[in-house]
Length: 236
Image (cartoon, rainbow, N blue to C red):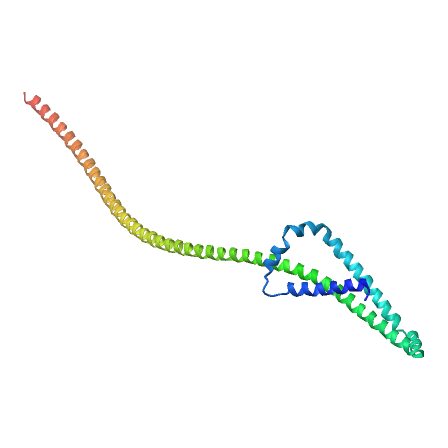
């Protein structure tokens, strides 16, 4: 195996180990997030995307080269040449095996490289979602407690309003009774005033009649007195 394919194979084995560790269930997403937040990773963050894209390009080139080698050694022309010479047949199959091996190594390396990046992204998202869900759960618990407290306060206010309505209703009934009693008293007072006015009017008419009778009697008395004076003067 050449040096480049040895490096690709080592890179593939390293990717397998890293992906297995990332998928290890006993390590939580929060721990991976705290691990990814180390200062050392922030130093490499400006170069991470460039290195990722560069590695993809290298693996794609190696994958295409492996495809070309496989097509080269599996072509009908190569098979015809191998049938002529038995040693050439063995050599051709060895080259074909190496090309296929390189194809699998480069293909799986490219696939696991993309998978590893996706796993890291998902682990970060899961950690963020876990923290957010914990915060939302705390907010939900607080909201439930506040809603329970508000419900109890509303129940107390409702009971207080009902008691106040009962008190107000009793007071209004009492006031209605007092108003009816005062209305009856007022009506009785009006009857008394009406009766008093009628008596005053009768007394006025009676007094007027007495005054007229007094004036008539006074006039008759004056006439009689004048008549008596005249008779007395004649007797003298």
